[in-house]
Image 1 (cartoon, rainbow, N blue to C red):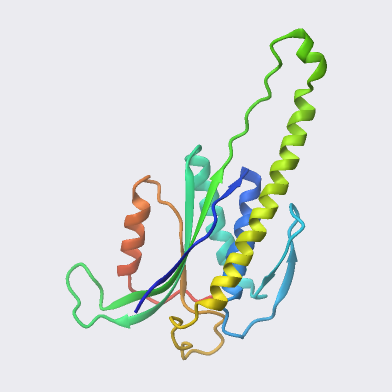
Image 2 (image 1 turned 90 degrees about the vertical axis):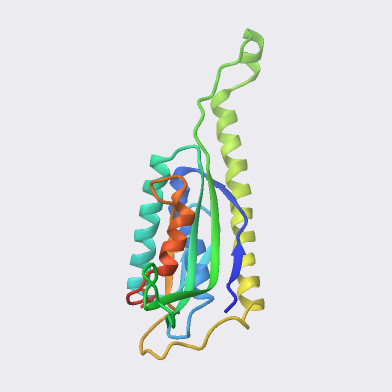
Length: 220
């Protein structure tokens, strides 16, 4: 089975914006891969003039929030690093040739969404070098204006990402597997992968998760 991959546009955010931005993106992806057993709920972002749709499932919201909190903790421990979070949809199949390093049940990923964030670090405003420039330049006022411009740019980029998600989800459908034969599920089995404590372990984490067995995590 081919795995379709969508690399979303990188966003530059400040630390306090991470939660809302990721919540918006992750829920938008899940909603557009929902199985129909949903109660759509409009959510208005507090930081931006943007409204997105959730599936209206409490457990789904809880699981996404938990992953976002883990991601934020990683960012706090690794400042000045670009970071990525991956949402993968998969189905489970029996491994016809299991070995000592693989399991009897393997996860076959059929779609992956990569969300890249560049968390901006705050810089203190520096006073001007000359007395004359101090009279004409207000660092505090300039900082407020700069943040306003940056916030508007982020809002525009976030809208682009949402349209990118919708476009990809509507155009890429041939690879989507049959609906799982289980009652009450909201979406296909999924997993959200965040960077590990080791800088080089993110890729290995992805490989290990592909070899994991056990019950799939359902958005239900």
